[in-house]
Image (cartoon, rainbow, N blue to C red; front, top):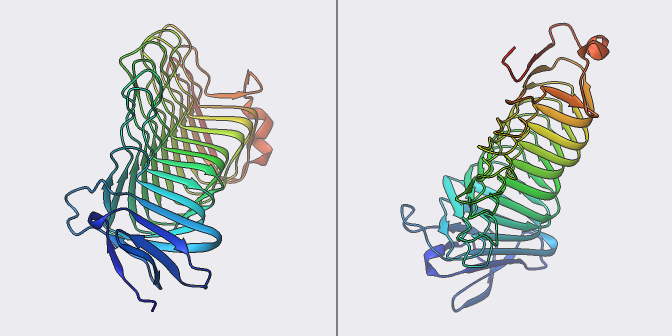
Length: 350
């Protein structure tokens, strides 16, 4: 018979699957196999002590909703939580999901690995990638989406990339091959640093094929690069297609690099469109190479009631770079609403 049960992570690895019946899951843990469950809640018996057991959620072709209630996981290796398909996480209390550290020839594990759509609508979760311990693999990501979108509409999400070592790069706070959409809540995404080696790059705060922010508070920090002229700081926000910001408060900081180039606050291979909200984009500082850019994109579209502050990194970065040239603010004055504000600061602080 189906029941609404509480599953304790200390008792073993947990696998949750769609049962094929709407509103019901099947849960397996230890000698309990495919137990039908109407309201799957996973928690820790002792929240001050992390468990090494992990969670796998597989929605298949259906949808699965799982509640994490003060879960604390530190995986020995790999990811703390693996999500497959259309999964919604309901968060209660303070949840910590930390991937395992990489071995002699592997990447650090991810806090959350998703292959499908991942939705977070409330509560608090801290997802942390494991560190790399070699020159072969980089640090893990806080949240890594292999496919599908990451959607955050509320709650508090802290996503931290693991650190790289011996020339390997830091992991990203949120790394999604799909889109990243934020409409509410508080999101802090920190790229991991590259440490103890030549040429390593800092991880990205948010890295995605498309980023859309319409509300909430988002802070995205690129990690710092390692030593050597080939290193560079990570980007605060990176998109391979476009970045659209229409509301909320967004801060994007490029990471620094001691010997190489500073990271960019916002970097898009497509366009950056800002039509509302309060946005701060700071380029990171470089060493012998260039400083990072506040915003760099093929096209920058500023309109509406936005408040934008963009700062170039030292040395010789640009505050706003469109198609390889410093953006001319005179071209968008007619598109701004009364009260809109755009402030740019060059690499010399002027």
